Image (cartoon, rainbow, N blue to C red; front, side, top):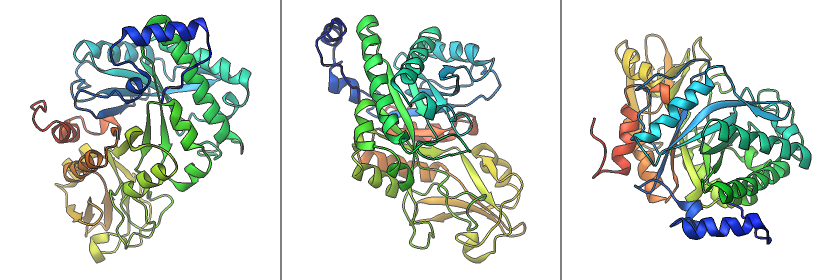
Length: 391
């Protein structure tokens, strides 16, 4: 995960002294160190243009916050909103309640990945970006960077891309790791480096996962949106744990995890992504309660877990369970609407999968989808059955 500059230099010597003085901060220890319970719990926090409020985030049940998003302008990382500085200050203050909590900034995302290809293109452009990152982290007292490039070698939402993006992405991670290590040598403060990865074979084909994983702490695998109403006209699970043979896309979290492992990513670096929201299909026939039936996009084809577990279940939607996929779904026979989502039962199954397959932990998008904390409490209880924080 952490790439060291092993050539002799004063920075390298200083890093050796830091490593020797900080217990457990060896090369392997820095890479594998996790939560007290052994698993990371990564919460993406996405306030958009809003300001986070006191009490909005429960810092006790998470180990890492990824604040979304910072942007890239003129090759440098910049804040994504006027509210970002006060939001960073609030999140940093949560360390008083949970000293092991780390706060990272996530740069890019679906809308703001347009600057990555240029930023990663040359040694000069990479250094300009990297120095802006280090200055940003210092300015806002942050613990590291999460790169959400959607996607190398692919236009994503219409962004600039190049065939060499995958190689340049690897070099960017390497140089970020080396720069972070020099900063650690100077300050004694560990800086985390992670990235969000698309859970598809196309993403793997356009990147160098076996090389890229060497330089990061963890990889946040986006094992959701595997089926979406806008592009998939079959009502389907969008985040199943396992693949149902009837699933026309043959996609699942398990398939993605195995593909990343086969591509050279250790299980201990894979953070399994879960959604705190659902997708809706309309005009879906009643056979199999809508599952794997033809459907169409509807207005408002997205809903938070809070809405699904509240107003939806009290207004004609019935919950069903796919035992093969380990995934729930809702169907409204009168309105002919099908909903794929995550709930406590499916999330508990994913946590068990993480434990049994020795993955690094869980990541969720995103915190505001479940203000009640029902899903987060499920994660906490599954990972820490004897020491879970009580409601």
